[in-house]
Image (cartoon, rainbow, N blue to C red; front, side, top):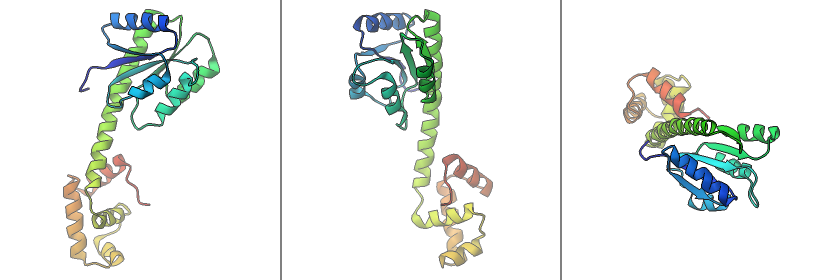
Length: 205
């Protein structure tokens, strides 16, 4: 990752917030503290690597509501949910929404450390995938509408002659467009083109 990860902690109990921050900092990790989900959302930066430790029970916006909101974004930090109550349904909902871990507030230092390490690894992997997705979107975004028409038909398995007939252009024009789109996508073979299109989620509509 380009920047050092930060552990973001959201809890409405100021004493617990400070003690948890001190514990995390003793592990050599920087923290940022927020007394409410609203305060966290005001400064939320998807480009900031790290993870979010989130109390499940807070007034106004619950921890699960904040997690659900973040989960709808293209890129968000992995979440570790905390609660003072051993609530299995809450734990299941948190995990379904993508929480990396669910910790009771009686957790040990080892449990917290291991949860944070899992979350940071998850965050790094997410950012690699997201960067690759953005790279592919940029590549395919370079294609002109005419090149995209040819690409869609190539991905359907159509030959150049059939594509030319379908688009009402010459076979040479199709060949030129096909050569340009492959150059823009930096692929040399049809197999490479198909693999890249599958990775990018490009489908014939």
